[in-house]
Length: 114
Length: 115
Image (cartoon, rainbow over all chains, first blue to last red; front, side, top):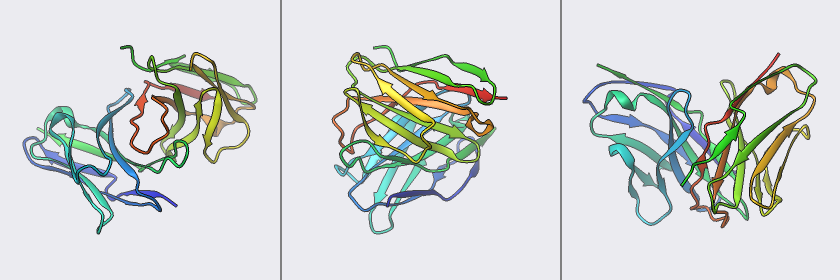
């Protein structure tokens, strides 16, 4: 069975410092992995996705994530935080066996201090 | 291209009533998935429709049902509402190939409050 664990429910950083949001997953198949961001009162927006083409995935707004199969991790990073990055971030695993089966992590709320 | 739209955006109902939520996918997308988001349970997959057929289903009681029309628009129905059904209901559309790589595009959600 697939599962996703976001290791931190809250992360606080200062503007201009690096961001690290941690995600571990388990899957019986070769899954796809995604990171989505949700700003207050807005829908979910795709940041990036891993589909086995390359282990380092670059996304929008300077975010990137590295797929590490040996560690079953898919951590999200950004070199320099911006105030507009404050939001909730979701790590997602999809196995899609004949359809669309998607598991969301519990979310990590990112706070960015001025 | 217009994004995923959901109507209504906000809804207040009382226990025991039923409710219907609507989702219009991005043009050309044939798959529509529904999710429930609550502070306690997070985001949970309800079901996915493709070509007017339910293709996948999450672990929700039979009070939650849905359908998809020939134009790919989808509706979700919840009967005999309970207080615990208060949530943000999100709809997502995708092309529908059914592959793991497919990206879902989310609507803004319908916020349902059950009193």
